Length: 156
Image 1: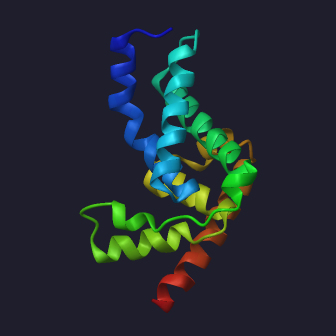
Image 2: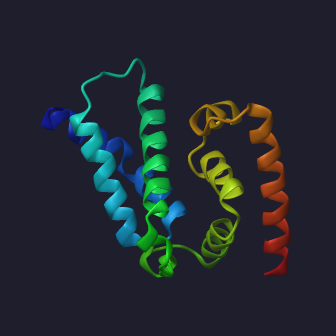
């Protein structure tokens, strides 16, 4: 079990990233909190140390993505309608809100790469490792996602 200092350190470093990533997947603040707690519980029970800070960050992203996917597979969760999350995010400008809504409306395969690339500043190679996909596939998904995003934003 991890020490209180270690948990506090990773809380400060990764809590925002985990919540934002879970929100992108789940589009519901309450479900996001559930996944957030599960990720930190898994970390607190983890017995291994990470080689580098990048490895640690990638672990948090991967576990968060997996937890969100597992959460969405749940039969009862899949039959509910997500709440409008943007009402719960304070201090977003109108333009940022429109862009965020549009990103969240993308199909999942585009939404996750767009989010990791633009919001979490991962490179295509790193995204490929996190999602278990070829780097060239990531570039293709980014290009197609940008094209869809551009069309949707032009319609606004």
